[in-house]
Length: 136
Image (cartoon, rainbow, N blue to C red; front, side):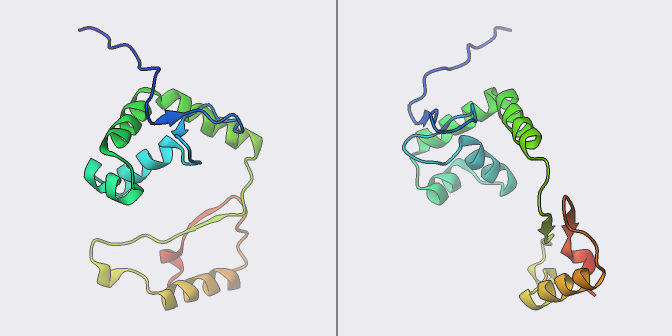
């Protein structure tokens, strides 16, 4: 088994001089390669889906995938630096969706869940809260 050399020249990716992050961005934009890659993973996108959703050439999407898969430690380091810089956040509210859209929360039920959460007087700072549990 031979190790493939890690690519250092990118056609569609570049560093940003105004950013503390070391990871690469899509040339001429403020879009991090990791954002596109994460979007593809989370939403189970094909390369063709990503081309359409991000309005980028197929070769750019393929380059994003290659970069993110070969530079995972760098992406993790950027996240760790961000966490150390400011580990506090105002709180994150999430909604879990089902494969059956009929079971998903409506806007009305989301508002009701937030109201129930407020009545409970639970501190939100640094919390990750699923609103589904507050929908009653």
